[in-house]
Amino acid sequence: MQNSPRPRPRADGIDALRVALWLVCAGVVLLPLGAIVALATSGNHLPLLLSGDIAEAGLNSLVSASVSALGAVVIGTLLALLLDRSDLPGRRVLRLFALTPLLVPPFVGAISWIGIAGPTGPLNVAWTQWFGAPLWNIYGGDGVIFLLTVHSYPVVYIIVSAALRRIPSDLEQAARISGASAIRAVGSVTLPLLRPAMLSAFTLVAVGNLADFGIPSIIGLPERYVTLSTLIYRYIQSGTVESPLEVIATIGVVLLVVAAAAMVVDLLVSRSRWELDVSASAAQVLPLGGARIPLTLVAWGGVLAVTLLPVTALLSQALLPAPGVPLTLENLTLDNIVRATTMPATLTGAVNSVVLSVLAGLICGVLGLAIGTVVTRTSARSNAALKTVAMLPQAIPGLVIAVGWLIIAPSIGLFNTPWLILCAYVMAFVAIVVQAVSAPLRSTPMTAEEAARVSGASRLRALFDISWRMAVPAAISGATLVVLTAVRELTISVLLLAPGGQTLGVSIFSLQQAGAYNAASALSLIITLVGLAGLGLAARRAR
Image (cartoon, rainbow, N blue to C red; front, side):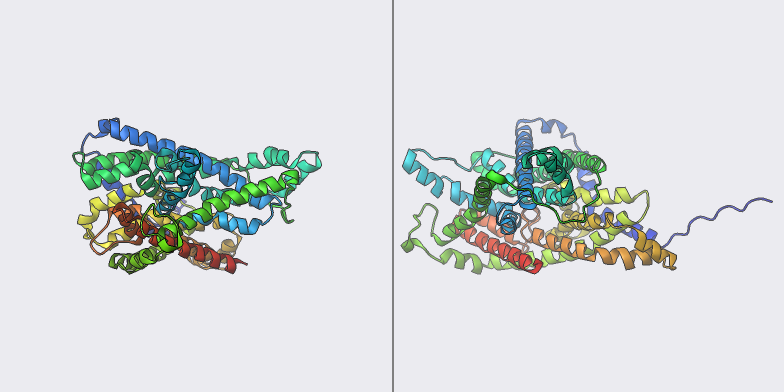
């Protein structure tokens, strides 16, 4: 008697959902990237990568991205140890101040620091009066590195702080009982366990800073410090090379390889992490001893300097009629604020930014929830590839993403429309929600889904009733972060600008480039205060 062949597993709703997600990712991510690769290979532009301009811009980008990432890791890790593991006074309030640069768009931060350390800023004016020469001109490569570091260390703090919470404080206490000092306990026990998180944070920040456009364009270009992002923008706007889109696509392919390499490094690091059992007892803070007062002064002074000084500079620039005018009572005016808030371009930009960012948040929230849940809570050979495709745009410069959509825009009927910006937003920011959803689900046991399956539920029903509902709060948080990120975005919006599609970021950038520095500061001040108010409300609700 012959054995009957084993029947194939029947496709169910999860398989159909996975296919649908692949189709969406193919249209939103792979199609623009494929257009870049196809355009780059249509001509031999590789020799141009070694030419003077591109080689210099590539070296500047590499130096600024790596040095700023290293500085951000050092600052973010020290803050995580001080705020989450020590008896530093006022840790909760200082934590809110330390996260403030995350809410300020980098190009707004650049504008504010020009008012502090620019050639006519109070720092250099006062130093020149006292010592006959300016202290430090923020324009140039060192200013770019400084501001990239300031706007990146909160990301490192968040990553390292999350890893620090998973390290039982019992290990440090055991080292203290064995006779080690607090610093020795942290150096010999805590820091080695934090190395994977620190390396992941370095990779993420370095790739992100490699793609930044606002800071290099405002701080670097006046001193002819050109990075790849500003060079790409110049090629698009001025056409100083033949076939600029093809040249940019070639640069984009190189950056895609860098992004893929960074993701591989992060994957290898994540596999090498140690999983520790979290202690059931409350985390014990380490006493700083005699260093408590000096560290308190340094931490509070440094954090307040990089948070309150820029806001103060924006306020003074917004209330003065022109740069270089002395800050006196008779020189104060509200004309810049009135002008910035009543210009038709500003009102249009505000409406467009809100509509596009909210729509991007909703789409990324639903799509990221589905992708994050499927790749985390189901088993399939294609899960890793699906997550990689969804996460890849996070490591790609925004200008390259914009070029991809610019290439395919005529074919899909979205050329010169604001909806092209929305498509690019979804591609660039869906990884935020995928990451937000995957993290909590990865650490949650599968017992609830297994119980639902035993009770007769299908795989799709168990996934929806258990995993999706558990992940909804994380998806909402991720979608909110998408909205906050998109509403202040500049890089993509400035290249895909369509008639009537100007955003707030483009409005500020246009004012700055037109020489209306005080009006740009006024609008930047309003955006900064709104972001700080949002942080205060979030902190109040978290109590």
